Length: 99
Image 1 (cartoon, one colour):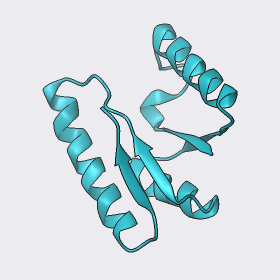
Image 2: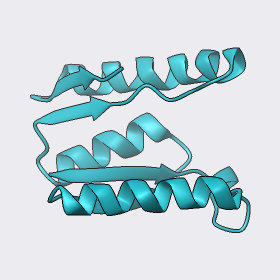
Image 3: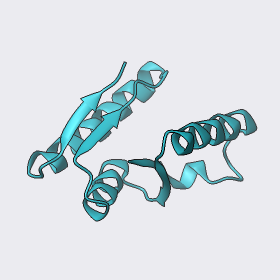
Image 4: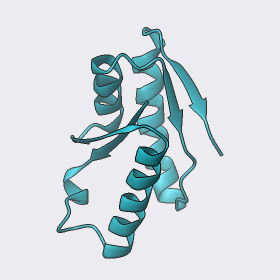
């Protein structure tokens, strides 16, 4: 099991709020306790980076959570989600959406 976080340039450790850093650390800790390997990948294209990790680690299922977003973030996330769908469509990877 792999837990991947794509760190975009706006999310570098010196730019992200401390409460969000703590939230990430807690998620990494939980993933590790559940037996996952945590991978932090730097990239500007989230969908492409997720697919790269999936191919590299031979992942067969991707689970995507439902983050708390504003309408602007929802619009932006829709583009990322559509990119992800296009990229995994040709691969043998299942997508599970958690809400």
